[in-house]
Length: 145
Image (cartoon, rainbow, N blue to C red; front, side, top):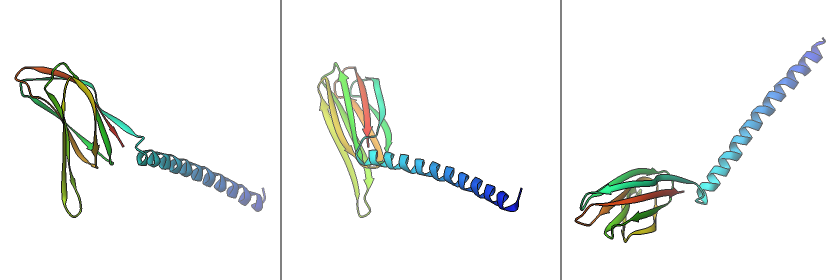
């Protein structure tokens, strides 16, 4: 084989490898852009609690801690036979010039859906029983971001 044919073959192989590498990089960038667009439009979600059954002593409380990586909201769906339950979502967010502590509490009847805004921070979901008797509840919490 002549030297020109060998060089042409090497060049074709190198260009083929380069095209494959560029195609893989482009596919990754498109997928990442799609993922970031979904986050910006609050289309992504994580289920933090999925029909989780909790039993409470009188005046008891149970806490669940999670990490919100992006600004978004948490929706809590709650079912209980007790009329003296509450759900509280709280987080500490350190603003560059001042600290913000956010806490929101919803007192519940027997069931409901509640939505709480969150910023990127450690998020605490507390579910409690205000009665002097035992109670149970089923909770689903979903983080949308």
